[in-house]
Length: 209
Image (cartoon, rainbow, N blue to C red; front, side, top):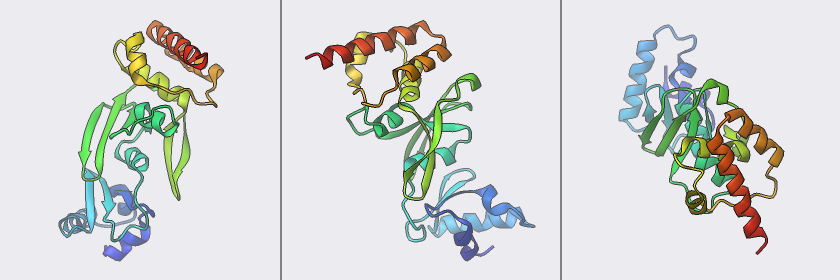
């Protein structure tokens, strides 16, 4: 396999899995050796085992962190603080791209940033859709309602009023209260019910000022 062959099959953002370029190849070992050479020559960046990124010189556009997160972990979607920031619910910059997965939890430090994956059961793996997050780049992203509930579910003592104050969450105009309640019911958690009730009270009090 020549480097030109890789450029022909790699997506515009340059993120690819080993499996994408092994299909139909007679010698997977040879392709892997080629990848090692390209990493050493800095034409390709290894993000983790089996996941690579073309260097800026060869990719057509910069890879969006959400698209990279999806590639780094199968059965995952961007949620928690990252999705809340994307939906305009968190005012400050989020330095780590946060996702939810049915696989094992882990945090990865890569040459292009840090990525955190939190675990939920298969029964709670819902409430997301594939969205265009940059030109010609798609990613699985939680809805505002699901991202909020994921955060409350995975954070200890998230029903405390002090914690909810510290989050400084802003209520988006398009927040679906019925959809939010449907997500709450799916989790069957008294803690989440209390947290949502108190959060709605905080928003109501702030809105009446």
